[in-house]
Length: 152
Image (tube, rainbow, N blue to C red; front, side, top):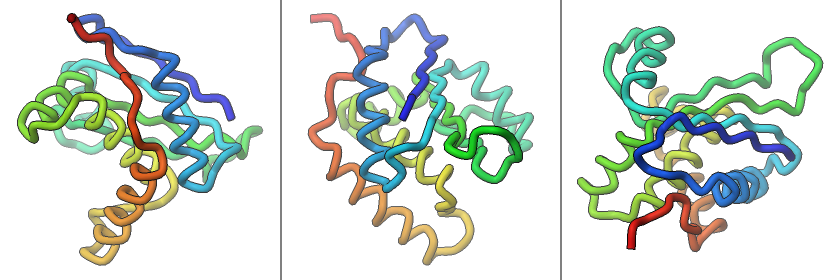
C-alpha cells in the first residue's frame, strides 16, 4: 500500500516518514489497506490556485481531494490525491487550540474519506455520516505521531 508524500513547504519541516506511516494506518482504518495514495503538502499560494482551478473558489482552503478510483487506467488500486495546505492547517490548529499534528491528521482523514466517496456537502445526513467515520478513523490511529519538526 504505497503512500507517496511530497511537501513544497519549507517553513514548517515535515516528518515525511511519520506522515507516510500515519497515512497507511488511516487507509487500513478506513477499510482500504491495499489502496495507493498520493499526498501533497503545499503552501497557501498553490492551494489557492488549485482551489480556483478545480472548485472555482479563488481562496485558500485546508484540504482538497482528487479521487482516481473511477478513472480509467491501469491501476485500480490508486485511490487518488490529497492536497493539504500546511499554513492553513497551522492557522486552524492555533484557532482551535489543538496541536498541529492533530489538525494534520484530521485533514488527512477528511481528504481520504472524500476519496472514498464521503461528501459532507451533499446533505446534513451525509455530513453526519462523514463526521462519524472521521471520529472512528481518528480514534483508530490515535495517538497521532509527531508529523512536523518543532523547535525546542
